[in-house]
Amino acid sequence: MKMTSEACVVSGIKNLDIKRQDVNYDGRGTLVKITRGGICGSDLHYYQHGKVGAYAVKSPMILGHEVIGEVVVSDNPALAKGRTVAINPSKPCHVCKYCLGGDENQCVEMRFFGSAMYFPHIDGGFTQYKIVDSEQCIPFDPSVDGRIMVFAEPLAVAIHAVNQAGDIHGRRVFISGVGPIGSLVVAVAKAKGAAEIVTADPSERCRQLSLTLGADKSLAPDAQDWIDYQADKGFFDITFEASGHPSSLGRCLDVTRAKGTIVLVGMGGAIPEFPMMTVIAKELRLTGTFRFVGEFRTAVEWLEQNIIDPLPLLSAEYAQRDFTEAMEFAGNKSVASKVQIVF
Ligand SMILES: [Zn+2]
Ligand SMILES: [Zn+2]
Image (cartoon, rainbow, N blue to C red; front, side, top):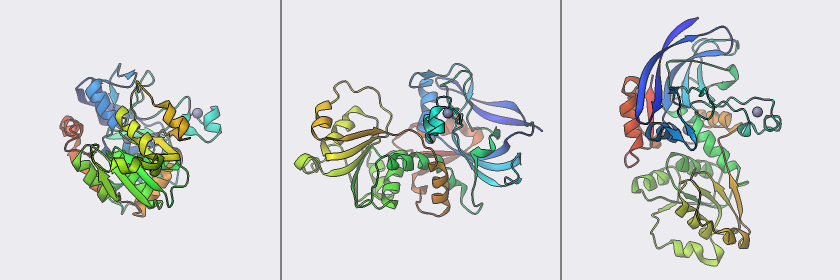
């Protein structure tokens, strides 16, 4: 089967196009008609800077890794034509030592949607038709609003982050930086029974959103309350650094109590003066978190069961032909949280 697909392609800094491509389905995997996608921070990085970290766009690449769609045809009989599916953008190798150990997110040969890490680059999902491995298709209840299900990928990231902290039930939790991921971490912490959730963000709009998603209190970086939270070697049992800013990490170290845990979620650069002594003397546990493993399925289930409502984070929807406007709007953090594209 041969289809023509219009794809949202980035070729470099501020260089976006809608390109027509042929999609040839040879009977292997699943051909999906993409219906909707969410713009993520990494898509914006490729658009604004032509790269994410050290990975620069060297040839045109389809953006997008937060997509849902409908099955056109599949090699898996369980995926009937028209079945609504959330697409897991991870494609691990299944044979490296990490995959064999169940840590597929650490796969040394990971093929993740919309990533310039390898050359040729791995195309993403912002296209009308896409062939994926059938195991990447997670069916969901068609009565669930697609605007909600597009949050499966970022929610999976948030659930994986919270899972890194161990048991969060009954704990005092701090989340520094409440963009979409930080706010979803709030919702997950709430769903998992955190006793108290406090957030911090310079943006009043983001602070309000975090309260809507389940935070008990949200503070500006210059609020007076921080002094109290620093008393007795810190207040919070578990802290999530979700901003990626060096100044935020210092605050996280100060307000997390001795023996507490800090999960680094936000992707930041190097910290010139890392306060190592605080980690040592307070016996803090400092851990990273990266993407997700089985949490993608959990996220689909949670959204089906309405365990969390991500819709307050949806700022706008755009038709595919208005892709450039969508990316411009999504890049304006004073007004936009999540922006979705309708295909
Ligand atoms: Zn994402
Ligand atoms: Zn692997």
